[in-house]
Length: 190
Ligand SMILES: [Zn+2]
Ligand SMILES: [Zn+2]
Image (cartoon, rainbow, N blue to C red; front, side, top):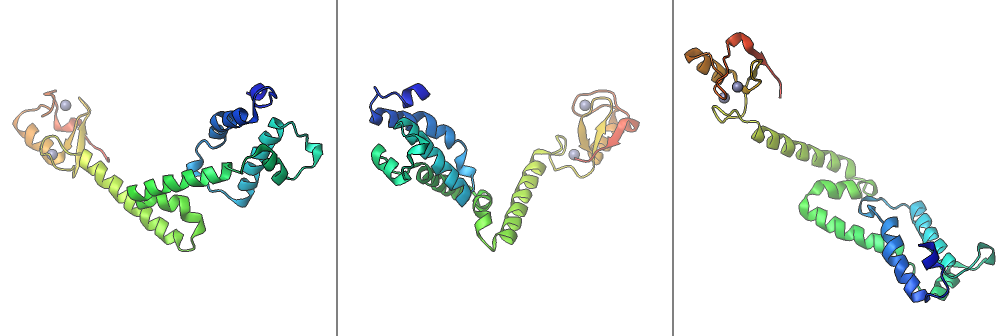
């Protein structure tokens, strides 16, 4: 890559395009989730300048201002601007999806963010728990488990009531017909 970017036989326009296509995506990888501080912004801009100076064969000792380098490269600072644009797109996407991700990415900047973040996390947790309870239904009564018991014979899980009702009739697991007695049942906590 270096040989292309610094090759004087290739026009600066082509090399700038190469920088944009191959280097910038690497620098910006995952940038949607970054919180860009002034310090990080300076580092990114310095990296961008480092590439441009290499491409233009400007030694560090030349002591040219960044503005002059940008002028010579006929390029505007774009890295930080592009990152901000990508973050804005990502944020818009997240705001449509839900409040939580929005708060996580903006959290630090707002003074009222902590209680809002906590309530958003609590809502998200409730959602996940409701989702989990939905998935964990007893196959016999099709209700969420109240007192889930598992059999050490087949490890199937059913409500205590469902086990007792089935085992009262015949000593078999209602799901797989494995011979099961009430002493094989263990209370589990899902
Ligand atoms: Zn049941
Ligand atoms: Zn079973």
